Image 1 (cartoon, rainbow, N blue to C red):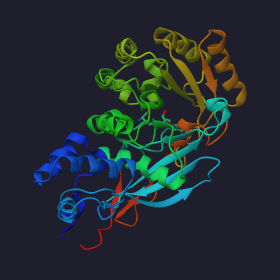
Image 2 (image 1 turned 90 degrees about the vertical axis):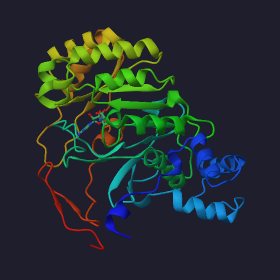
Image 3 (image 1 turned 180 degrees about the horizontal axis):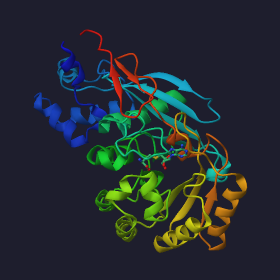
Image 4 (image 1 turned 180 degrees about the vertical axis):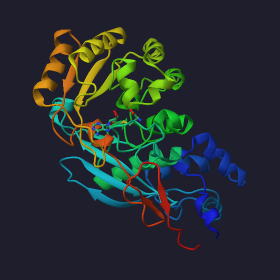
Length: 378
Ligand code: SAH
């Protein structure tokens, strides 16, 4: 097999709809009910290979092996402990890596129901959006994840933890709305009764603010939740730290959010990292009040977690409190999380690939510079 072929994967069944499975199975001259069995093996019984699918005829299993794959990822490393945040490193078929973060509910996040598990899922390898404070984009953009790769993060995390995932947040590496069709297919599979079966209300897509895609996502008839990584309440401040704002300035973003609101009942969330001297002034807080009020959003304030290689700092606690007070005095639902590494956005926002040495990519400390050292077999 040539390297080019090794990098072209067979399609992953975790990203298939039942209709597509039927098409595949009938293309081998097999009756349609075999597709139903296949769906059960993949999603209900969580078979990891075609060999395990013992009630499928051997010729069908052999044909499937040549046409598609069941799993494509290898769990490579786990950081953290089961009672706190666990980062799971998954190796992809092409030697790249993604991280997915398991977050047990803390009472602060989910009230009494403390056995809830949230998974923070990645949507891309790297990120092209270049938010100045974020670790994920430091090495630039590599590629989109397929729908199957997005779903497999959940399957792998459930297998690892031995528990069902209750909530999904698309707050891992990458910009989910820049991988729109794979994202929406993954959401469909994660939500479907025949699939993973997670309620739409328990899935949150987080975006840096791709206005047209927000509207497109709003048209999908599922009550998923939306979080906006706002981090600045005026164009002047937001332009400094989020280049995406030059493409979709706040007025355009908020026009898309109003559209979203017409189709969704649940509150919008604004993620707002507090960065000292950048976006933490009380004037910004007052602008944030107006912005949040205009679309009835709640605000999650997250003191910035320092990233190696970046000079941004979190403001001191007095400044954090003063910022929060402006919001609460104005009646905006707002939270401020101090627990380091425990907050969802903070835990996920620090994802950064450091592991791509095995198959030829070494992360460079200089953003978007990569050194390729050749792949095995070349
Ligand atoms: N691209 C999407 C999905 C990534 S979500 C988005 O921007 O929403 C990851 C979240 O973590 C975002 O809200 C991001 O702004 C935040 N984040 C990034 N770096 C962080 C840091 N160092 N400390 C705290 N939060 C951070």
